[in-house]
Image 1 (cartoon, rainbow, N blue to C red):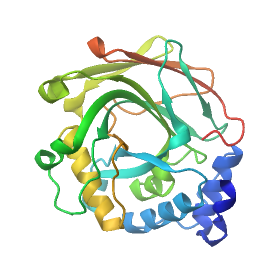
Image 2 (image 1 turned 60 degrees about the vertical axis):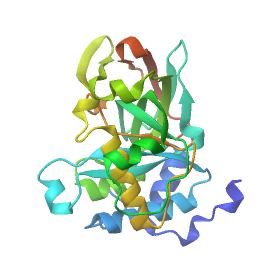
Image 3 (image 1 turned 135 degrees about the vertical axis):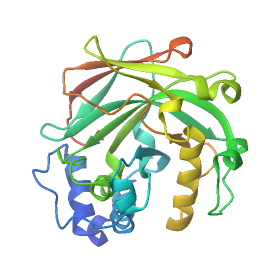
Length: 270
């Protein structure tokens, strides 16, 4: 399929990120003038999506912390998750690639699955999106970028490189999620040290508010969310840096555990 994706028309920034990701090669600096707005960042992201040889299986959401949320006019940012980078959690830790000299982190997440294509509108609320969700899963987002400073220069830089996403490990389905969602809790451990605790309530407005934000954003970008797509709703315990050779476990209590192992990237695995 890759022959159908021509990145020659992409912006230089998008092309640099796509080529670095496909080669598993770090970028020492941001490859161009950083975007000054989220709209400019999403234009770069759209170019990179068009040049990436895979289909979008879903989207990740990340929090924009103060004061950036006021400056950039948004409390969240979004990035695509590609189908070859969605892995089903198993009994043994899921391996994922880390670019030497790049950025990598693990995040415990609650993942929503859409049961139907979302009607195209721009006024979604947390209450209105709830009927669209068919299932909720535990998950671990693998954050990753060829640029080690992806999170150090504001949310527009983060958003421009696929929102700093490098994959999603999908865990167990959460039973009775509609009744339990606000009370769900989890923790993250790296190399046997607990590095974060939290839950669905740690996500501003909750996971359904994340979905509403995404739908409104995609509406403005001329995109939509399809049935079966996944939405990773935001870091429930924080963003936890990880290096090749380290292992992590996300513990969701009665809803199961997800293990993963960071390994050196070898070419186009993210």
